[in-house]
Amino acid sequence: MIDVHAHAVLEMVLGAAGEHGPELYEHDGEQRFRVGGYTLCGVRYRGSLYMDLEVRLQAMDRAGIDYQVLSPNPLTFFHHIAARDAVTFCRRHNDAMAELVARCPGRIGGLACLPMQDLEAAAGELRRAVEENGLLGVYTGTDFGRDLDDPALDELYALSADLGCPWFLHPAPSGIDGPLLDSRLRRFDLDLIVEFAYEETIAVAALIYGGVLARHPTLDVVISHGGGASALLYPKLRYAATRRPWAPDWLRQEGTFEELFERLWFDVHVGDDLSLELLTSRANVSRLVFGTNFGGWDSGVAQHPDATQTARFDENSRRLLRLD
Image (tube, rainbow, N blue to C red; front, side, top):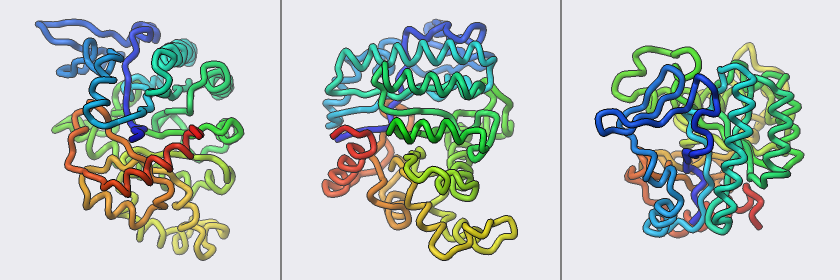
């Protein structure tokens, strides 16, 4: 089984973003992880599968996962800090990820982070991460100070397509290195539940309505957690594409929205079998890939793809990641 949704914390990146950290330290016998002015408590990184490759491999064996694609910790996207610090951090991260993959290339692959504050630097780092470091694709947040359909991103999207590397989108909680979206999201872990789904759904809309997929027909974009609420909202999203006054003529054409929605890739870490059934009824099943948020708080959700689905997801992942 191939798992495309697994985050890693890399020792080499600690302190690489200047005053923003990241910093891992002990307080009252508990590990704490500081990113800028935000501190995560209650999650053990050092000595766990997040930072210890042997612990991860053993856990993968127990879970029946043959190959896992590792991505940056969303707390450390650093999309809103000074460009100089972001460039330094991303370069250090991508070098460290490549070194980790080299230790066990048959079991793990890696994804690159990019300094999205500086698009020229991001393009250079994308090319270096893929061509020199051998990373499999790009992994960014959904909010980096500009809309996903901003034409300024077109050269970067085109480069990703030309390199044949997929672009993974995964939200980060707001208020880490940028503004807090809504203080209510700090209650009950709603940033991890509601805010993530909100960001993923907006990403789907921007990529389709904003013309990104139409302008870049060979770009592969993967959205985490089944695209948030997009499967549930699919009828309204489709209806709006043909009826709302902002919809351009090309989007209003019959079948265009459906065609573009089927271009999107989604990981199927959605929560339970009923949610997965809804996603598979509306998304392109040839573009669904297996993901677990391995080791994360919700990695044990009650979701059990059958053997046929798992085989299909693996086939899709190999095609997406150009593993064959």
